[in-house]
Length: 153
Image (tube, rainbow, N blue to C red; front, side, top):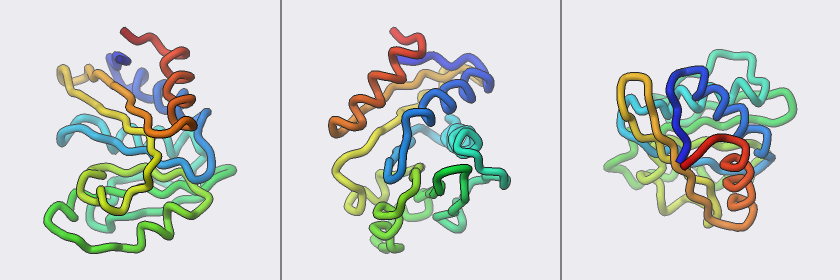
């Protein structure tokens, strides 16, 4: 478990995580509305070298950005809650990019087998608790590296 006490901590978490990410990595962000999923996505994009303003793609579902060395696909699947629409997700998963997905449970049938899940739990207005779940050896290595680097219980 990783404790986040403020935006600076969330940014440090995003930077730490991003240093281990590479082309084709899929990160799933879970948490209630207002937990900080979009904020973390913005910090990941910033750490990847995205210069454009990153905002929630709720109405577009998917926004793509060019980072310094990698592309960044940011998906917000909240509007797909009662839909079985395939928006060409496989094409994005096969791209040489870092993919961050908010509300991934709504596209569970389209997700790759191996992913890294970041669960964000609101504890108060500013404080969050983060837990990480890994599916696959590659993501287990990322999880262990991030947990080693940051304080956790």
